[in-house]
Image (cartoon, rainbow, N blue to C red; front, side, top):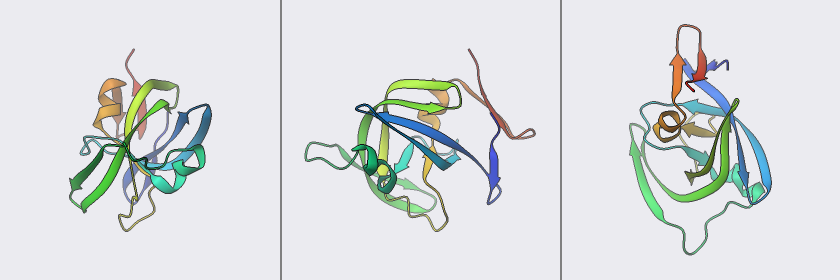
Length: 127
């Protein structure tokens, strides 16, 4: 699948399913420097993903600072034709100073056996 270059960074879109509802989310940064996949709380609220009293709350840290997120296991996370079921992602505010709806991190990229070609700006998956 073709990646989109924005802010000189690779972006894609993802589909997330949770308890029978699915949402397509654009403007997801493909980030090999992020250990985990993080999605905007404002967007997934529409399919019933919001903080619950028994959620595990963690603080993530990166170059841009730190953020408190909660973890949630979803029915699937899909990028292009690659779908990972029962996938745990992190949900947070995603306030990083530029328009971004999420980060596709190494947890997904590794499990999905992703191949990122920056010359052709494409993302494929080894079978």
